[in-house]
Structure formats: structure tokens, C-alpha cells
Amino acid sequence: MAGLIDIKAESARLQKEIDKLVKDLSRVEGKLNNPKVVDKAPADVVAKEKDRLTEMKNA
Image (tube, rainbow, N blue to C red; front, side, top):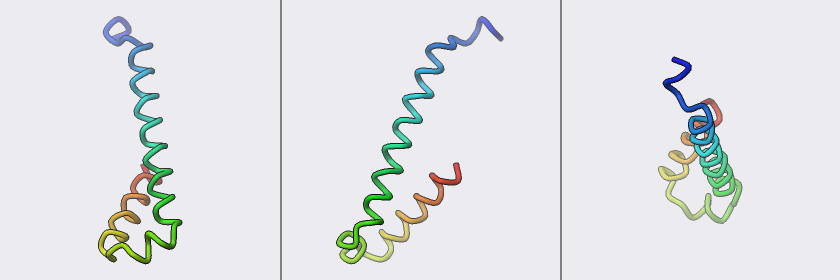
């Protein structure tokens, strides 16, 4: 298996995925910490974002 996986390429791919998840997590937290967004958004949208935040933190 050692020759089948390009470790540098896989590492770069995983880092890119981590960076995207960190950015998404920050964005969702920002939305939910903003009272203007939470107060104006429909309750179901806020609930979905809270669920999404929980999933990201547990992953």
C-alpha cells in the first residue's frame, strides 16, 4: 500500500478539506452569534444552522 498513495497529495487534500471545514464552522458560528440574523431568520433556518454547527463540532 505504501506505493499506492501519494502522501504529499493526500496530505494537501486533507488540509484543504480541514481549511474548508474551519471556514464553514466560523461562518455558522458567526451567524448564530449575531442577534440580528437570529432574530430575523425563520426559526426552522436557525434550527438547521444549530444542527449543522453541532454536527461540525462532533465530527
